[in-house]
Amino acid sequence: MSNKQLDELRDQLDKVNLSLLEQINERARLVKEIGELKREQGIARFDPVRERSMLDLIATNNQGPFETATLQHLFKQIFKASLELQEEDNSKALLVSRKKQPENTTVALKNEVIGDGQQRFVFGPCSVESYEQVLTVAKAMKKRGQHILRGGAFKPRTSPYDFQGLGLEGLKILKRVGDELNMSVISEIVTPADIEVALEYVDVIQIGARNMQNFELLKEAGSVNKPVLLKRGLSATIEEFIHAAEYVVSKGNDQLILCERGIRTYEKATRNTLDISAVPILKQETHLPVMVDVTHSTGRRDLLLPTAKAALAIGADAVMAEVHPDPAVALSDSAQQMNIEEFHAFLDALEESGLYKQPVKHS
Ligand code: PEP
Ligand code: MN
Image 1 (cartoon, rainbow, N blue to C red):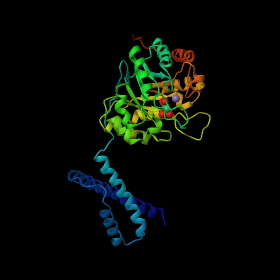
Image 2 (cartoon, rainbow, N blue to C red):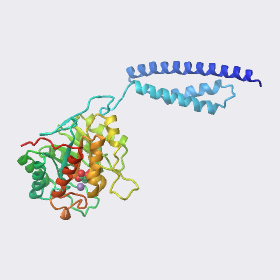
Image 3 (cartoon, rainbow, N blue to C red):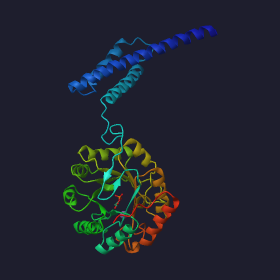
Image 4 (tube, protein in one colour):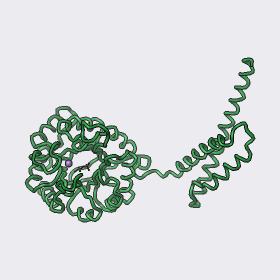
């Protein structure tokens, strides 16, 4: 075959490609029109019977040289892409997505806002153990202009024999300290039935990693008028995390904060692996504020500072770290909580690094 012949055939091929291109796009336009009609009539987009009959039509009319199975495979790809086109059209974008709401959501607490561009901290003990214990931490926090206090009352422990938390008594202690020192308090709720109870005591309802896909709990938290802090599940993908958030927001509660708290990987040097890139991904994909929990993600006191720096540098809206007056005797997470001295050193170091500026002191 001469080069001239080859060029001619290639020219023809280019023409066929362009004609196919036109045909495929013409097909896409028809599909979009059909999608519109289906939407108006409330008909499901995917119709397997219709797809089967289109494939049969191709089979009956195929004169080769392609095998029918090959052609059907190719057409299936076109059908699939068309279906996606219809879905895009009907734009079922998630409520939590940036597509749906380009502006950042801000979550208003008693005397703080999360997601307004200023980076905040959440400190407090892993578990509420006593009034004095919480008060000691809270007072240290106030000295540093920190007003968001955490403390677990219902503790979802790995072992049923470990300390399970003080329950309602713990919420009462937290509220008392919060009221006395004018702080916002966060505590985890583990049962849908307790959401109602929590409204009276906490400023933010925390849904823990182990409950990220407790859909009844998510729905209940979505039905109340109280900010929610949703932690990423132990082995949850970002997509699953975002859908869990959607459960809350779809029930009407848009006061939601997401929290990256490390995920389970094969790495054993840390308790979990802090997925730091989840922060910008979540901020790109959703309009919700994003927090990083450096305590549970690392499980190591020596890593709290460097990971907090990373969280601030990457644009987290808030950082959570646990503080206990005497971590050695803490009833949970004894290995990674900071004592009061370490808490001050932690904030000093962050201020020195230039990544964080102490807020103006509130009363
Ligand atoms: C907690 O914050 O107290 C807690 C138990 O964290 P997580 O749900 O992320 O394990
Ligand atoms: Mn803890």
